[in-house]
Image (tube, rainbow, N blue to C red; front, side):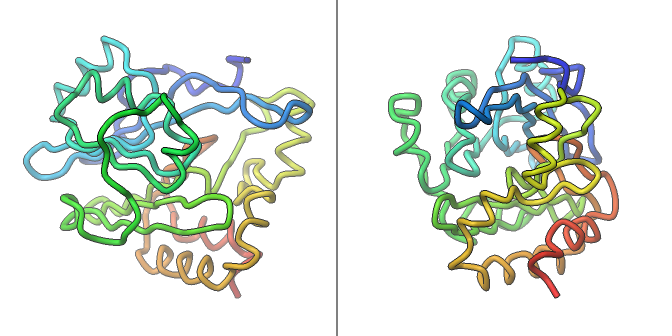
Length: 246
């Protein structure tokens, strides 16, 4: 595991805009043995009215970070947005036991004993406590369902793996090659090519979902891996999905 690609400082709140923060976390090794690479991690926190916090794809919960989070509000919901983003959910629930866990399809089967806690499904577009302030959009593929979130007030779109955008200067020669072949190299980060294949039979549904997200006109797009987009969010979506959209 390498630390060269981290977005320092890690494990601390970083303001994005009013009521939105990110936390850059440690790197994790992921992928088959011959193409395994180090992924920097990132979580997003959105504060709603009443100081309720939505915790998206949590990174490790340190004592210092727990104090920072408690200072900005109360964690109410802990989100596992797809089946490979769940590792630290149980730790956050231990730290904030009143928070409700919401899990995307596939997490329970993949996580096993890692998450043996009561939870609610994250499989619909509405019916959540955050509906008035955050839009929820599940996108179903043959391998993985990912659930996207749009904070209306700040025009912030939160993705997970639907776009990855690794910066070449943070990578080794081998991982620069892998990310370029995978279509996830900054400044032209896109949906990973292997993930595109899982939507080959659901291309129309994916296209409809992307058109809906573009219609939201997001100002910024937060990603879990790599450089995220601070401005021109809708334009970045059009660029990243030009292989799909007219």
